[in-house]
Every structure is written in structure tokens, then in C-alpha cells.
Length: 234
Ligand SMILES: NC(=O)c1ccc[n+]([C@@H]2O[C@H](COP(=O)([O-])OP(=O)(O)OC[C@H]3O[C@@H](n4cnc5c(N)ncnc54)[C@H](OP(=O)(O)O)[C@@H]3O)[C@@H](O)[C@H]2O)c1
Image 1 (cartoon, rainbow, N blue to C red):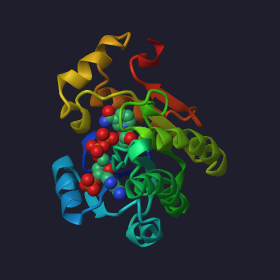
Image 2: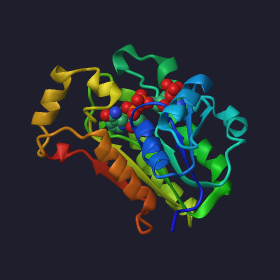
Image 3: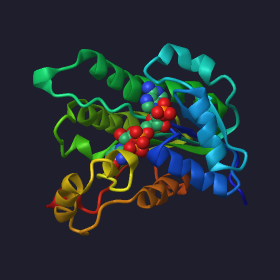
Image 4: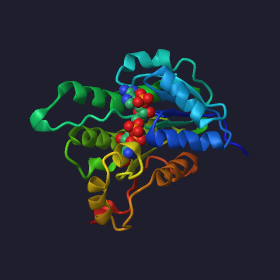
């Protein structure tokens, strides 16, 4: 039997969110995806196909989210994948970038859930994107490591507060074929491959499979799932 409701992907115009949106559109699910720009969101929705539609919102402006999300109803699954990468180091700290990212991932994710939870199917679920930078930083990841660590706590609280709606997080390792990391090329990726016991980089397809598992398995709740090929073991 098909699951009820649409799949909403916040940060669905690019990378991992776009691949999740593509997966569900291919399955014939109603998909709503977001980016910051309406035109770009509509273009991504057209690319994803099916009945997908695009909306514009900025998670770093949480007071605007109620209006931006007003047209979204009947939600089955909600995926929060958005990020604005703030390459920041504490010795040259950029306050604006740091504030935007902290607001986007922590307050913006939570406010989106606050707005949409009353419009969600009780059997539905939420997946938040964190990331392994919370445990293994890279140069410039100070704020990325911070907010991805924050996602861990957010999930624990939300799994309790949203009940019976489930809430989980995925923490990918470095996803080699994602736009952000593939643009850095082999000099950045090969050391990660060598340090990963599976001797391969995580792919976007691996991440989509894990997100689908977290969204759809009715027994999985309050989990922070690491999908990294065992990267932290070496
Ligand atoms: N890629 C990896 O290897 C990796 C590893 C670990 C964790 N992650 C996590 O996985 C998630 C997806 O990463 P990705 O690499 O696929 O990202 P990405 O390709 O950079 O895509 C980011 C998405 O977020 C949207 N976005 C950016 N700023 C926003 C804002 N202020 N408000 C609302 N939406 C905004 C972008 O939309 P527009 O540009 O159209 O506005 C885009 O859809 C992130 O949460 C990231 O932390 C990724």
C-alpha cells in the first residue's frame, strides 16, 4: 500500500537532497522541494519530474518560514538537508557566516518542523542531515562541526516531542560524488578513501538508501545513523 502524504525536501535543489527528491518522484510520490530561489527550485522540481514542485525559503531567516511554508500540506515525510557551507576557522572567525549557519541548521530546521508537524501524517517521519564533521573536523569545518553536533541533540528531543511521528538523523562521511566534494577533486578525496576501511568513498546513492531506511522503517526512532564506510575506525 502506498504511504500517505507528500515528501518534503528542504534543501532539495542540489546534492543529497536533490537525489532524495528524485528517488521519491520516481516512485510516483508527491514531492515538494525547496531552495533559496524560486526559479532554481522550480527548475530542480522540473528536473526531478513527476508532480514535484519547488518553493523558495531561507532557513537563516526563520521568522519568514511560516509564510514560506503556508502552501505545504498533507506531509508524509520531511527531509531537512539544507546547508550553507560556512568555511570558518576560529582564528579568523567570520561572525556573519557563523551566525547564518547556526541559525539555518539549528533554529531553521527546528522552526520548519514546528510549522509542518501539525500538517504531518501521524505515521510519517522526519530525517535531519548532520554529518561526520561533528567527530572528524577538516580545515574550515569549525561551524559545520558545531551544527552537525547540534543535530544529534535535536533528534533526541524531537523524537520525544513529535511522537508518534518519528525523527532520525543521518550523518554522512565525505560523499565523494556530491557536488561539494567532487569539485575538490582527488587530492582531497584520496586520503579519505585510504583512511576508510571499506576503501571506497560514500556515494549519493548510499545516502539515499539510508535516508529511505530511516524514513520508512517504523521501528527506527531517535537514531543518529553514521553512514561513512567505517571512516572513524581508522
Ligand atoms: N556532501 C557531503 O559529503 C556531506 C557530508 C556530510 C554531511 N552532509 C550534509 O548533507 C546535507 C546536504 O549536503 P549537500 O552537500 O548535498 O549540499 P549542497 O549540494 O550544498 O545543497 C545544499 C542545499 O541547501 C539549500 N540551501 C542553502 N542555503 C540555504 C538556506 N539558507 N536556506 C534554505 N536552503 C538553503 C541549497 O539550495 P539553493 O542553493 O538552491 O538555495 C541546496 O538545495 C547538508 O546538511 C550537509 O551538512 C553532506
